[in-house]
Every structure is written in C-alpha cells, then in structure tokens.
Image 1 (tube, one colour):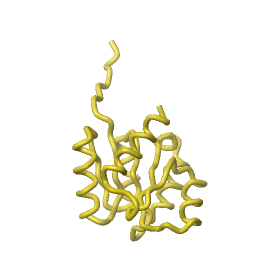
Image 2 (cartoon, rainbow, N blue to C red):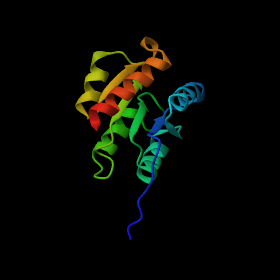
Image 3 (cartoon, helix red, strand yellow):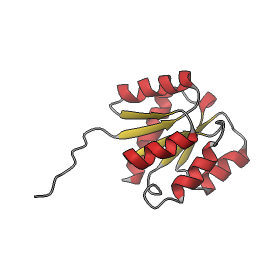
Image 4 (cartoon, rainbow, N blue to C red):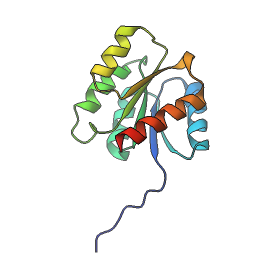
Length: 132
C-alpha cells in the first residue's frame, strides 16, 4: 500500500537576510494559515528548497554572497525546483531589476516599501491560485 504524504498547510519559504523583516513576514504568513520555512541567505535557501519542496518561495533580491536573482537562476534551472512559484520581495524598484527577475522566471515581485505585510500575503495567495 502506498503511503500518502498528508500536507495540510501551504508551505512558504522566505529567503531574506534581514531578521526583522523575516520575523515580520513569518508572523503574517503564519497568521494567514501558512507553514513558514526560513533561510537567511541564498545558498541556505536553495538547500532548504531542495530538501523541503515548498509551495512558493518569497525571495529577497539584495543579499550578501548570493543575491536573489542568482538564487532565482539556480532554482529555475533545477528540474526539481523549477515549477515552484517565486515572488521577489525587494526594495529595488528599478525597472531593470524587476524586468530581469520576471525574465528569469519570477511569478511576481513586491517592492517592500509599497506594500503592507497583509498586502504581501494577499499577493502570494493570488500567485498560488494562479499556479494551481
């Protein structure tokens, strides 16, 4: 008999180097009924994504060592991760950063300063509905 993996909550991986922002979004997503996975840098984020296979990744662009666009290239080039929706969360509002992220396969982007955490949760829910 095949064992069925029972998963009740939608799992979001947040890759963000700012602990304050990470904690804030983790709280908001948990209040909205999501299970939250965390990674404080790009390298760790890729490892967590490979191990846990989240339903969606919220990805900061500006991070030390490996930035979010590099993480996006790796995940979209990985056969096991390429179908996971990615929402870029950034303070970079320059058109070229946004266009590059979307061209690399991001499903949406959020400029941190323009959206409240509740609005970010709403955008993530919208992306998840589109990806199902």
